[in-house]
Every structure is written in structure tokens, then in C-alpha cells.
Length: 95
Image 1 (cartoon, rainbow, N blue to C red):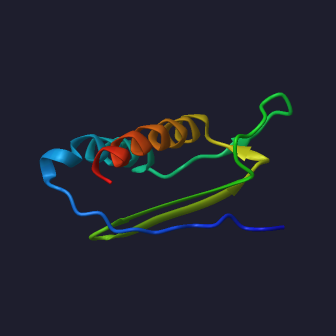
Image 2: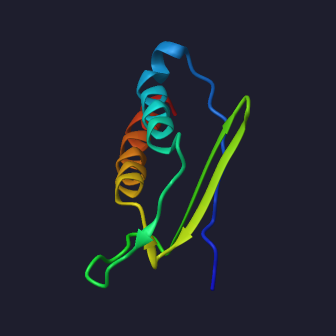
């Protein structure tokens, strides 16, 4: 088993340029504020990822969830997938 390569880069931007990213974080907060309920993934529903890890830090603490391909939360997984596409577009504008 191999892990993906992760590249980290700090990007500083004006608040007005980060509105779409802030909106994504607010949507993530709304989806996860009461926790993440997982259901068994049906054999007909092929996962996009092998494992998912979601972490969000707040001033009061953090939410950190991990789950494998046998479980799912459709709304959270769809949000992560669509957020990645939006983030890619937003970050290309500023890099």
C-alpha cells in the first residue's frame, strides 16, 4: 500500500478574493456541525476514494473523521468532490 504525495503551500490572499473558498468552508461546517453519520456502502455504489479523511479546526476544537470504502456519507462525499473542483479553479487564479 502506498500513500499519495502531499504538497503543502501557504497562500496569502485578500478577503475579497477568498469569498468562494470561505463559502465552501461554511457549507462544510453546515454539513458536519452535528457530526457525520456513516452508512454501509452498497456494492453498486463504487467509491471515488479508497479512504477519506476530513479535518476542520475551530477556536473551540476540531472535527476529525476518517472512513474507508465500505462506509459512506453521500452528501459529505459529494461536497468534498465538488469542493476540490472549485478549489482547483480558485487557486489557479491566484498562483
